[in-house]
Structure formats: structure tokens, C-alpha cells
Image 1 (tube, rainbow, N blue to C red):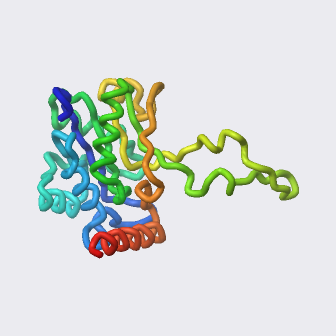
Image 2 (tube, rainbow, N blue to C red):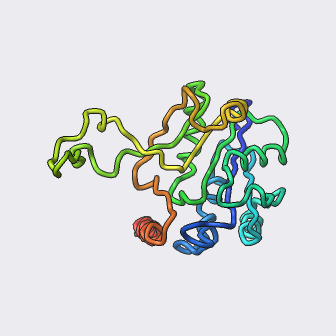
Length: 226
């Protein structure tokens, strides 16, 4: 809790996946991938409650083992490939009840995000009064490495605005529940970006990204051990 503010964290983890089956529970550097998000959420200083929304029994079991037992099973109508994460968040809020000043969406496909990122994003929302805060990362290569390709393959420098371009990395979304309900978006007018380093903003959706993320986590673990 920040002062008298109440903050709920929601981790959406449906069973289906178009590109990598079972990715949420697949072992990643020694723990299930969703375990990294659960650990970050539990280490957060601002989350008053953590709710896992899933239709997957394996995910629900893992959540319970890590001290975050799910209060419901996500219905099938909200668990298909076309299901909206906004619908899943609103369903979770309805099931849990209560009055919340902020809802924080933490996708398990961002295992490199830290508890400090969660806390800083919520603090930014609180201090700024913004209706939402979305985590972003700089481009993986500086603007000078980018080019425009013209007709015939001719290369031109990138537009000047590229230096101010960031990537929405999917790691942390913070919103005021009333604005989320009204606009059905974590990026309403007035939303702010919370900047994370590129190396903490990876979004894992493919086997190659999974392998690269695992190597990164193991390297970080080795560096802390030495």
C-alpha cells in the first residue's frame, strides 16, 4: 500500500498459447516461467493483493505453492486465443471485489522484470496523478543504427523522432480501475511511460526468446554468485 492507496496485482496466465504450448509452466532457469513473475510480485512493496487469473490447473497449483492461491478459475469464455486481457482483468476485479485505487497487470511472459519496476511504476502513477503508467524500453539499438530504405533499396537516415521512440515491453501496466473500465485500455489519454532497461523488458513468446531469456537469467545468477 502507498499511504492509504490500495493496489491489486493481477497475473493473467491462460492455458492456451499459439506459439509455445505450456510456456507459463515451462521450467526457465530453475523455476516455472510464471514463477519469476510471482516472485517479483511477492517482493513488491506496493501490492496489497496478488491474484492469478488462469484456467490452467498447473498454473493454479504453482500459484498456491508460491503463496498466491487463486480465488477462482478463469471461465472458458475468457481463456481462448481471442480472449481480451481487459476482460480477464475486469473479471478478476469483479470476483475479488473491494475498492482498489490501482490495478497492476503483470504478464508472466516478462520474467526479467523486477519488484522494483513494479514499485516504481506505481509510484510514478501516484506522484503524477496519471490515469495509467505503462513500462517501456529504449530501442535495442541506438537511433544511429536505424535506417529507412527507400525505393530501389537506397538507404536514408532514420527520422529525427526515432531518438524519442520507445517500445512498450509488456512487463508492467498500471491503471486506475475506473479509467480502465471506461476506456478498456491501459493506454488512455494522459498515460505515462515508465522506462526500463532493455535487458529487463524482454517479452517471451517463442522458443528462441525463451532460450535467450534463460541464458540471461543464468548469467545474472552466476554474476551475483561471484
